[in-house]
Image (cartoon, rainbow, N blue to C red; front, top):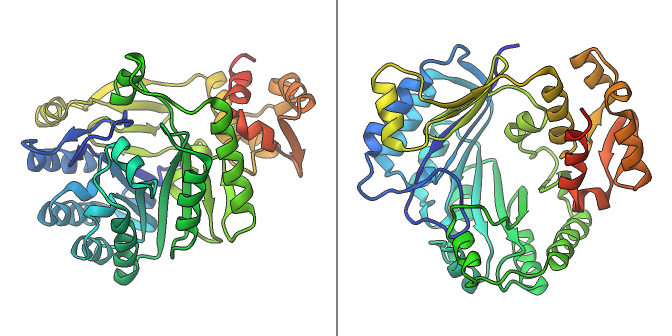
Length: 374
């Protein structure tokens, strides 16, 4: 089966957020143009040029200047034919009308905005560069330019955040002309400013119960709106689910281009070199810019099928699993499934195994049960 999706990583930011552990660098004095040259060369190595989904993330792609952004967009369109969803990540304060019009002119039809919260004090704690009014301006600019699908990211379980704070952000998002909401609880990742502050006792997080309350509030609030939950952290109006992210959850293959990008092609899961200059040097020397590479075993592929597929509301389909692996779900995971059903963490409906609401709250524990099975 040929690869139908690609992810492109732009590892530059105008400012480094306190919680972020993605591969990113402060854009000032970075070799941005040389990076784009190398990135374009890597994209040319792809065997399949006709794609269903393209996702450009970071870092922040909108940190690029208009000229750099246009150069990237031109290159993408000259190398690939994108038949479906074409997404760009953006920071609200960087999404000027000129930039969003440029995106639209080159075929981008979906924008994912890193909003995180509408509360100014929390934006400051997170190290975000935008103000609350920038969010409204960015959504208006995207609509005015004719972008078909707009998604906002919101975070919960933040330092000093109350349920009321989260509720206010969610309500404000729902009053806007948007199509999709992704909402994630804060995870303290090593090598982030937050992690270092926490270890030094300089950061206080809300307790775990409040984080769970916020997540349940999120699900309950959106259940009475046009936004349906289709994945643990993602909610969409009809016709606006993230088709690109579904490629990951359905355990399908995709290209990963750029420093620190990950890909899954011809059975190989790989990740690229992180430091920008190392990545550029590898490409300039005619080498694959690979940091890690592994070919998941048959057993690992079945595990991945479960813990990725169970993220989706639909869950894992018994027949699809059997078609993929020539073995029934029960033969491999029957005991685990029954145990989790007895604990009311899994449910079964129309040949789909899926998480219950309680299962979603403690999703990671459920996923781990499938790793212990084999």
